Image (cartoon, rainbow, N blue to C red; front, side, top):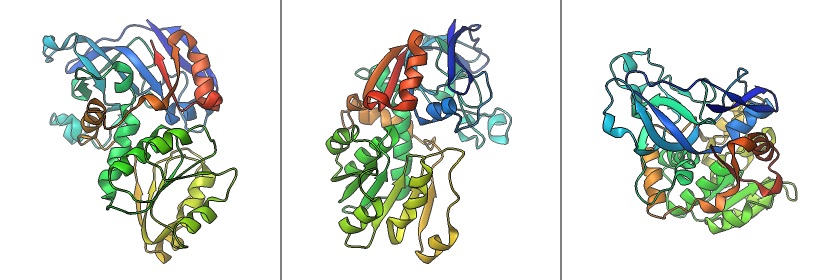
Length: 339
């Protein structure tokens, strides 16, 4: 079968790989749609370490094609979304059969070969049945939405609180919409591009700030009467954005870090103490129903994903797909690949 393979930094090619086999408790999913995210782009550009060669990708949906021992054969043909974190199979929780409770779960496509291929094997427990009305491309965009849900679950946003979302990539845009749905009052978003802001505004942002045109600290303090925002959420993974985030949050406010890369600065402890901040680190989708709830938000139309999809490619065009996702050329937000 064909698979996209990262062979080095900014090097990706199609290769022939053996078809996967479903082991006990696992299934083989034929991939119908996959999407590229910041993690994939950072693997590609070298800002996240990954062994080469590696089949990247973790956001995908498809249909069950084969099942392993212990899995109901009637699942064959079922349309599914797939949770991207694989259980380690070795810890006490995994040995007890509680794979969802594994604390050492690792992201497919980063620590193991991923979904940018025609077929992929995953544990049955990673499957989320895809209901009527949700297409494969929509289900392949659930991960940023689930990460956003994990964030708002932890924050417990109060009606009318001011929120700043730094970065308007897929996770940032998802959080913009979720914070609006959660009752945020003033909702300020930033990015280094104008392209995402039309989506930001349609998702509920009240203010948009281009970081290349205006100082973010100045803008946020002006909009919050010099106090800073109740909540600041950093999603971009930009070193400059991470370094500035603490200046934007009010005393006794909440600071969230989601954006991830190897070159991020450390969190300054003394300013955190001086402002009596609560700091949250969000390392994924939470794994406690966020995927299922994200799917329901899409099914019911509470969240419309179409505005985020700016580019679509076939697996044959994977080199171009990665180049666009990395450079964000042509106003790219979310790049979708159809094997």
